[in-house]
Amino acid sequence: MVLSTSGKPNNNFNFPGGQRVMRISLVVSLGCHIFLFAAMQKAFPVSWIMKPLKTYHVELFRPAVHNLDEDETSTTELAGIKPKEKPKASDSEDTISLDTTDRRYSSYARVIKERLMRQWRYPPKARENLIEGEVLLVFSLNREGHLLVTNRLENAAHSILAGEAERAIRQAAPFPPFPHSITVSRLNIRASFIYRLTASKK
Image (cartoon, helix red, strand yellow):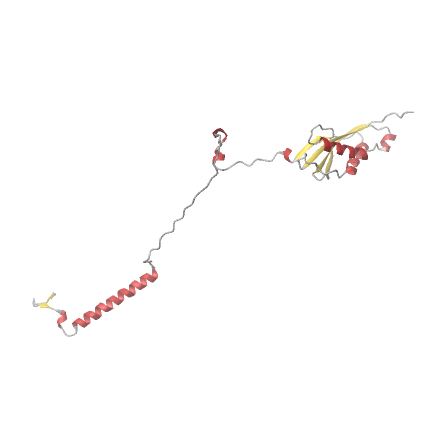
């Protein structure tokens, strides 16, 4: 109801076609709302059907720990971080003499010594000049018995004697592979070559 200027009620639907105009207005308004809703749904899709949420169960298994000594458990062990141990030099390399009594090396050292003795000679020139002396050498072998290097531990009094000792080592190589008792990858062997002239018996 709307009051007219005359103070009498005025009904807009009383003029011819008023109800028809009202229906058209409602249909147009409804169509606009549907269009706007469809546009909003396309721009911002909303799922009207709620899908059930998936639930996952995760179980962690850890082996039982027995007799855990608290005194021996450090902070790094509890955190799961253990310091990396540096390999010891003895795990990959060792030094022995040909007369070693170590059971791990003694049998192999005897084999090396026997092969050296078959090749070692007293240099004729040194014998003629009555040259005597001692030569200390160290030579290195790998696990296959191959000669890696030969070094003099000290300067020999006569190079001719040292040269013969080095020649004997090179001539005797390669040596037999390491036995199972030798676990190192490189074996350094100290060898002493003593040159002494003895009087010949008449």
